[in-house]
Image 1 (cartoon, helix red, strand yellow):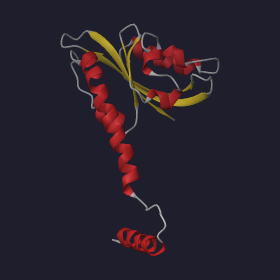
Image 2 (cartoon, rainbow, N blue to C red):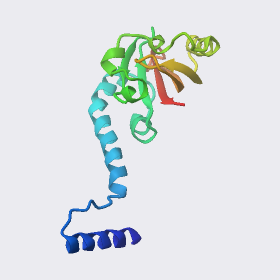
Image 3 (tube, helix red, strand yellow):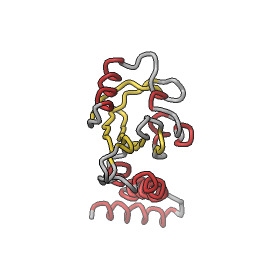
Length: 170
């Protein structure tokens, strides 16, 4: 209720002085951001479905992308990127089109910890989930720390079909 009283008092000042005063939108600004993320997810849902239609498991991509603001990267079994969510641009400056067909090594560089890279590689080779924090490189060569939660994905027959990573700036 206090928010409405503030709104009313500013509105009455505006009428008295005949000046345009911007009014506080409070929750609308936050909601607008959330609405935009939902809209972006809706656009990407069909692309995600193309990749995930034969998976033996379900992941809540909307939760990961909209609510937890994770970047979603999906690779084939050879680690070539087949899907990257559009919010990857905010993380590292790359667009999805720039990374599709490449491997996640694209994000690594001179100061990326080799021990961390080896732990990730071992988990991938063993087809096990992993969670690691790693130093990566943006498109403009700036460094950033990234938390990666990776999962092997299997089809109905139990064959490995993809790797899935949820990534966020650490």
